[in-house]
Length: 289
Image 1 (cartoon, one colour):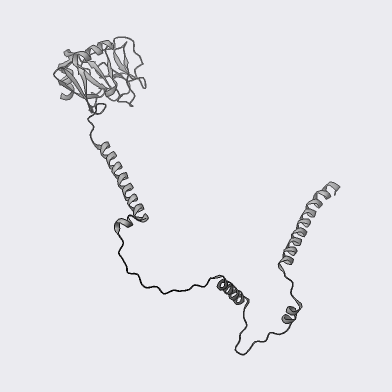
Image 2: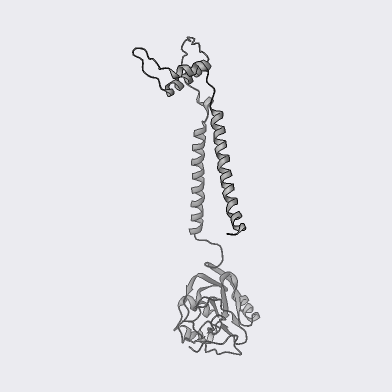
């Protein structure tokens, strides 16, 4: 065995032995400090037999300690002198003077907090469930005068978008009304007879927003290539039907769209206007009808 290996083994052993010796010395020091010095008279008494009187029994160390502690407590407790006092006549307390106890205050605070929380929650639920008369998607929207809407369509190159209703509005040709009456519902025909149609912006295929294509004068979905003519009738792509539309109303010369009533688009093959692409497509269609 090499000297390096011997040293590597001997050093930990010496450290452990030194630790054991230090621990033993510390224990002996603690034990020595805990022991007192007895007088010779006490030692002589301890060596001799303990004689008990008649009727006496040996006293345990615990009983001696308890008696000493009781004696110390009695010595430290001051003597009390009881003075006889005449009884005092009981007078009921004044409620105004007492007021509210702390327990009553906390109890009432908790009840009030719960009541306020439930009231706020109930008000929120009612506000959520209560039908709203504020304009916007899901309500009846007064779009405007029919002539103004047609002017907006012409300005938009055949298309007018109204974000508050999430809808496109285009012109419906009067020459196609005869075919339309055989296909569409009265809620749709009301707007068509006024020369307008309101289409839901969402593609019936997977819900993408369908943009207009100015060059082809169709609606062409950039997500999966579905194509619709200017009045929302399907021309190509994977969509299962034409674009959905809203119920429409006409009051005088005012056009009203009920975005809370969505009507499913016409079935595949519906083509009341006969409109074909008027220019290049913005997206390639996914096939024919």
